[in-house]
Image 1 (cartoon, rainbow, N blue to C red):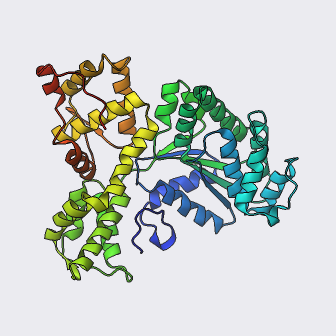
Image 2 (cartoon, rainbow, N blue to C red):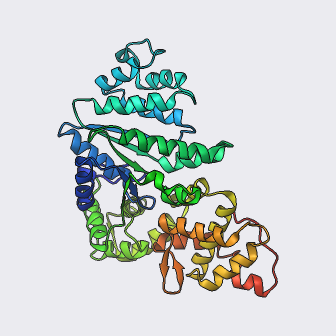
Image 3 (spheres, helix red, strand yellow):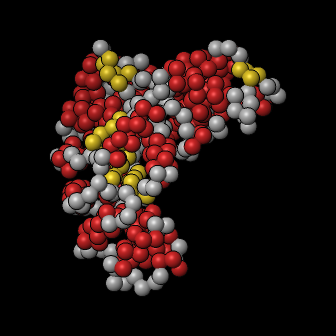
Length: 417
């Protein structure tokens, strides 16, 4: 098993998740479309890649496309077509249905295939050609699993970048549902996934029924046993041998506080680097805290963690993003976001945020859905110690607790950055 940070894994590097794979496999084989949800770094891409690999071995066609960079429906259709390019029978049918495509599919690269298809798509014809693409998949001799990754980010970008963004989002989701339901077959089967929640977006737009054909499946964290087993398996890897004192793997789990697969992998990678720099071949329980503070929370861990803030900015409107950062700073510094803090936040931001109570409720839904916080008997808290400590380290020196702002008659704060 190879250490993997920042990339999806499959085959021998794929660990655990057999129960989730079994559920997802059963859904796909029975033709049920799925919305795969779960907080960041939970392994959503890895599980669909592994499922696709296994299905390909059994004669399925696996098509994976990432639409994070798309800005309109035409881009998505072209992205899916590019992913289909290696499947020559389907790609040839797609090309044959386009009057402007005159080249031989086998003589152009996948990127050229996408560019030529995209050049002929416009607001007036993308629905028709997209529907034909779905039908071409259904006509194929083998069943097709189509994965569209980062669908919520594409929809949010389309919402923000176009004056009629809300209409475009509704139009695309209605089209996608209709195109899949119009195919009288169990293929193609769609898995839609993403690192921000789709359900909160459609709820906010008042169109939750547009995704009712997608059966949600939430990917949760590893438990203590799986987290420890993964760390120990990585330590025993022949290519990355690492001698560990008894109790190290458990101490790692205690340090991060939640079994997010990427964080387990990242902790192992930092421990291995620590032994190299210290010219050692063994780590102790005492080393766990050192690596946690200097590496995971230090400069080398920033790329992993800052992405959580970036994803929030991509997924929320500006005023909601400001509110989200206030909630997370308060939760990290004070250990809880209490009902009292919530009332104080409402009062602080009422002069500058329209319908602030609804905005705060919306943000809390997103933060819970995407795994940043969870409910407790007295408010909300971080389930991940690593995320809490990272947010706390950034804000503890300048975050004024919400109740203190009101008691000291502080002015309305500027947007948290």
